Image (cartoon, rainbow, N blue to C red; front, top):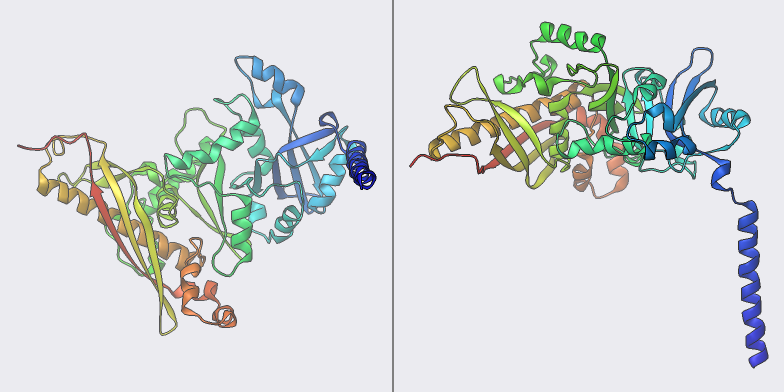
Length: 433
């Protein structure tokens, strides 16, 4: 009995030894791998695809960590190649690099606007089927070439490019001007029948991109409500200039740097429109992803002045979808906490009546901007990026009935009712006695 037990133990140990021996023999050491930290895809000039890779340079990264200042060029290299497909492009890179490419540490996928206007399904499925590519990598649509976007992404407060790409989407937690959209989020929305995908909007800030906003503003007077929605919106849907920017349009003094403001909306795998800062905030509020943000509402006391209000969610946004004669009717209830962050002569002594007036204006501002955003995405973009289909499917008992209903097509004719309740609290208020 003891001999059998000993033989059994020896066999197990032998199997473990053989397994680890094969792993060591076939595995790659760190020095044999080239780690990709960013992928850029663009339309090629002489071939179908222009593939750009930002590859970590470990030897330079160590120097950058120990020095007080560093640049992107020191800790990584950027190479581009034109190819017929993503897989063939990666293979071509492997043919001339001294190390094998590894995508397990890729932080961001950047799609150019030109490529996003075409069908990108081929690239989505290729990356999803790649066992190295991680679904938590962020996805960005840039208004410039993806290669130039990567070259302009120079970290100023981070020493390593990989850390810089990790920190980019976190600004959504305290501004509400962008969102943390991952490749997994995008692919899931692309393949299901409940929603449409959305990506982070990025661009290189330049004098040209800033001038394009000034031209657009002179033509539209900063009115974000589209006439095709056939809805009448008031002064509440004319946001402050700061919240009307798209990526690349903020008046920065240091130009030719990348910035991420707004979102890129897709329909059937193609880019159909862009959302600015305030519209992105509306998306976050409905999606229960808003951490904290600041809005500038018209002052209820002085017609030509604004008041800065900090908002954050008090309760989760509640959405219901009913079908009225086959047409979606979507009801949205929003509960937020608000705090006054700007002080003027009219707000330094707010009595109960004035507080209610500020709450009323805050509610009205959010309600009308959210309605404007919803009708813009449904009527103009014809896309459900907030995934209201998750609530609509409850109206169907049989899955085939849901598929036959074709929610993403019916969403174009949806009507909305938005109710915002704000609880105004601030330690900065001086109450009248």
